[in-house]
Image (cartoon, rainbow, N blue to C red):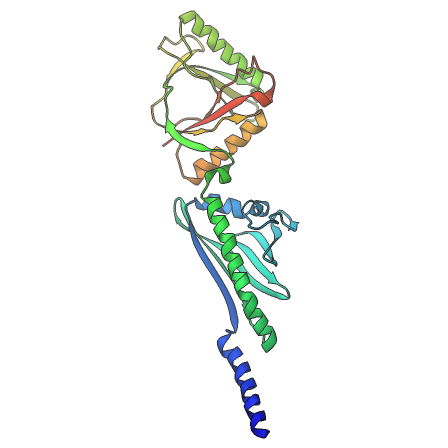
Length: 317
């Protein structure tokens, strides 16, 4: 009997000793992925807690809690607390019952348009052998969940439509011959102001027998605290002499960024400008000329802004 007790006792001792030998004193999770996306664009997405729902895997992609700098998401029975606004990182803690893996999602710039993302988190193992064993069995779930989130984030970030909300492509300047006019205002030039300017250019073209070859272009900018300048231009089929406010312009046939058609009024157009400006900065492009709107629907003929169609053009090197 004593022999059997010694054997059983030895087995128990070996079992618990094995727990401490085979199960590490700290559980570490490290997942790394390279993303073909500019660092500034990745950081902009990571720094906004609400955007995480756009790539969060699983059925419940909405955060349980959300502020300007933090959010709580769930995945595979785990809760994940994120805190944004950190330098090249977001704090990320994974909660599994009473256990917490503390860590961060770190952004490491590689090239002008690629980033290495590394999610690192860790948790000390419990000294209680039964808790330690339970932690070991839940460790795979936490690690697999991290890999799942990063995989979805990887796919999301490599699609520019997800980043900018609008397709932006690069083309060549095709309308190189233009007739333009400028005007200074004491207010931001309205659609009505610029539509009238376009009409004046068309009237001048009629006196010279010139035909329009593409949609009118327009741009407005602030000169100082009280003055704004609007410029409009229309692509034409043949050159003519300058006359007063009407000036012939020749655009170099270089590279130009072009958005997909923007449907809607001023709010939609401003948002498209915001996003293409992000694109130019993200990819470190230089602008040899000002960007402009191309009005594909005549504002004088169509007053319903929901039916307006506009493209943004942005000359770049």
